[in-house]
Length: 488
Image (cartoon, rainbow, N blue to C red; front, top):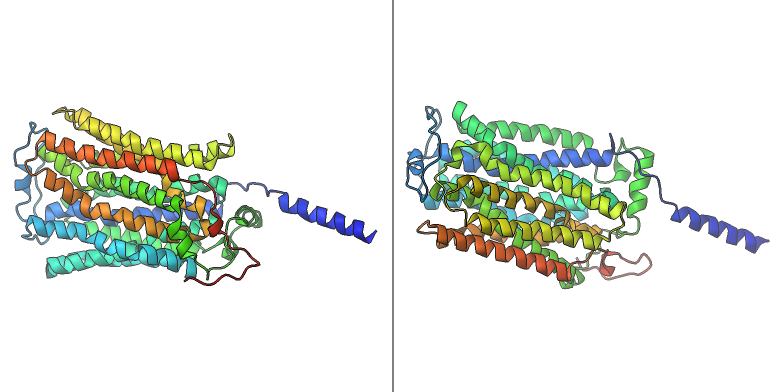
């Protein structure tokens, strides 16, 4: 009888373990609250990253002369009356301008891997929060640094990059504790599309601020928006569901139960050797590097192409410059909903979803990028193709971009630090190579630039399709009963 009771008890226990908790509502939930607050955080991060490229136009002496230069196609721009400068202007040559605009990435690359490590070791909330706060503070100091000299401004931009460099690895580490597997695409696309939203708002708004006030207010206004975000982040966010003060018991149980078989029980052990030998990780590295090559080339050189080739000064139409990022934001959000719908309702394997979304989000942009090079002086068609190219890239947000959490949720922050370190390199060298290939600013030269970017994009998509995985790797879940050497 005692044996039967034990068997019955074990059976009940096993049944309880297999029961999946009910999905708590999304409305007013803590996990979606985190998604929207982190979206606001990335909005701030990217607004602070791109506002200098707009403000730079007003920071330079005789900047209007650049707009008067000849282009391959007839000018389409509508003259806009220049306001009177009320802030300082500077006599920086093109090389100095290049260093100022590119210096951010030299700081940004330094804190990618350390950001993932420290987020896992000490918690992501304050690392993410203080990282963005540092960027906000140095943004507020930008006008002072510019007055002191270009060297000081470059130093401030490097420090901004160092602060912002922890943002993606820290947030990936945080989502490892917060995102249930079947809601992963939805939550992460809401969170990370704050970057596109920040670009969409900052580009046109910075131009308006420069025109009606002066360029210094670009940094003061967006800096104030960042300070408000830090206050909200400090008050309403916790590192994990278990430490959150306002989460419902049902939501906490649901999140922790859905992740219990995916997370490593200790923060001390990091299998560096297994991580660096992992082919699924290197598949993400190649895809991330390839995608960013096209992304950063367009981000930095699209205004040049539209001005020098199409004869349209993009500085005079902020909404046009923001159009590709608006499309990217919308498709990334819709893609996240579709990806989780395919996995949850139609039971499509995660690996198939990630690969399909990566192919569409990388091959599609490559096709339209090449097509844009053959539109001649039809600037409407050129802008349309370039916008479609950038918009389709948003689909990859539910592809390789969040695959770190599929293969190793416990080490997702560290993995993203590794992949984003490689993916930052295109921001440093891609535009430099593109400019070296377009010294004469002819359409055939720009076609070569677009072909190179498209080829790299397609290679990344093929590589990820071959080597990408969608399940937690064996090295990513430590055995509870085995004492393994610490590799930290």
